[in-house]
Image (cartoon, rainbow, N blue to C red):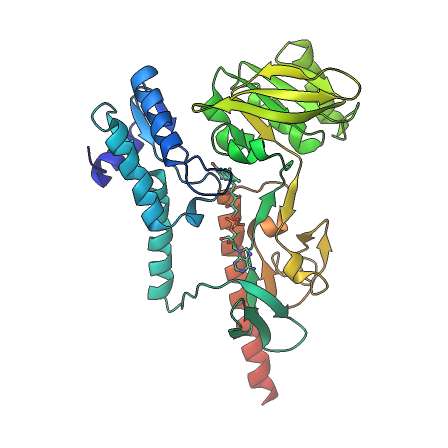
Length: 358
Ligand SMILES: Cc1cc2nc3c(=O)[nH]c(=O)nc-3n(C[C@H](O)[C@H](O)[C@H](O)COP(=O)(O)OP(=O)(O)OC[C@H]3O[C@@H](n4cnc5c(N)ncnc54)[C@H](O)[C@@H]3O)c2cc1C
């Protein structure tokens, strides 16, 4: 069976009858792709569990960090392992890359120059602004839109890394539907953790909420809703407990081991582990240059007409880097559009002012 874009699109339009699985790519501890583990996963799902279709996803949450060759390799591996059994195999990454490539082409057609670089230094104190890339390339800009995103914090256990994308996730809203009628646990004690646990009650069979302290930091309204779900038996609390180990096999996560002060570790059988201990906006680069709140770039205060302008006129921010609440693809894309409109307006006004001064 070959990857067939027409076929894939037809299936994505249909309601996808049958059972589907997202074949996320497992990784070895050293960061290399675990090809053997991936083959075993898809083989088990299709041959043992009777899954009809596979989405071959990339490294979860970091789809684009895999090279095109790596993505093709994972797709070919799935085809060679189960191509004669699975009704359809779709490469989620390929589809995502199609969107990215199409968008880049569209931007280029509109006159944009696309440059791949990692910005390591910014100087917003002079005009034009100066940005320096990792190999020393210097970019001058009359306006800058920052959209460097936010990274979900991790606990730091090797087993958490090992099973990331195979049962460990940083986003229940995004990945929760993979765990329908299964048992899951959420790690954390703030608003996000409580919200994730509440969200999972509509999908998972049971959700364990594991918090290292004896009380939550979440808002009272959320705690009221939590208490109702606990009373209904949909959520079980594990307080004063820490995640000690994620346990699993070639199929993914099977359990977690918890650590409790001065007590025996408890094992809970779960298929999904949602680590909800916060996000770290990728803003180290802008420290001292822009006003921030808890690491998120603050916007919309310098000019009430420009919701995405930062504390420096001409510098705008969009997406997760300035959004501690929603952090979704569509909200990020929407705020990106707002920033583009704001930047264009800023440039037009700057040009008018310059002409008036001449
Ligand atoms: C596991 C997971 C699953 C998700 N699933 C969903 C989902 O199903 N639906 C949904 O709506 N949302 C989902 N999300 C959330 C969604 O991915 C984000 O909200 C969205 O990608 C944020 O877009 P962004 O452009 O702000 O940041 P990002 O997509 O994080 O992009 C930031 C970019 O900036 C680049 N960058 C960072 N620093 C620098 C630098 N110094 N120089 C140059 N480039 C830099 C990064 O390499 C990256 O490419 C998921 C998130 C995760 C982690």
